[in-house]
View 1 (cartoon, one colour):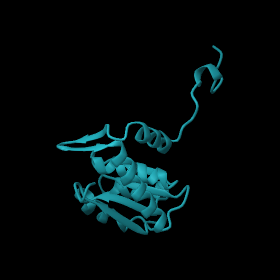
View 2 (cartoon, rainbow, N blue to C red):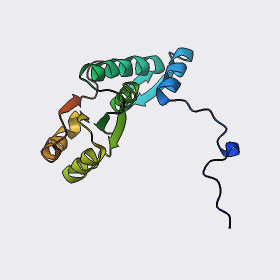
View 3 (cartoon, helix red, strand yellow):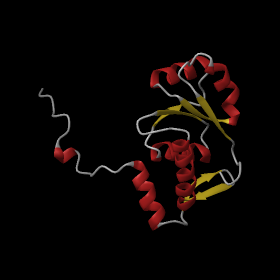
View 4 (cartoon, rainbow, N blue to C red):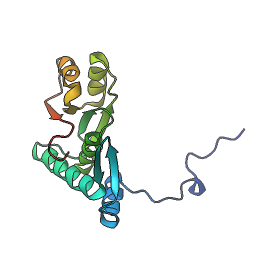
Length: 151
């Protein structure tokens, strides 16, 4: 049986678009359309764009630069999406951690990814704090709260 080429043009006809560009184009085209439903809260594409831009600027302000790794530990909530897009807009690599991880798994993934910053949801802060001592490269933790302010 022949081994297929890794990527044949007929199998990859789509032009590559970075995720942040897809969000920007969608926010430009459909700014008031609902992008996220999180319980009783909703966020439009424009809000997702604006809030993630703010986080990207904040990450750049603390020295995050392209190709840096940023851990993201949050449950399935709007803040996860905002943080994820903020990380990629800053040019960093998002290392998303499963919210069910215990201290050992959190430390392992942060060490394995080389993350120096962890964005952590307040509901998971205790677990992240317990793992922090086993992650020597981790320099900063940014705590997000569900429903704090607008996002």
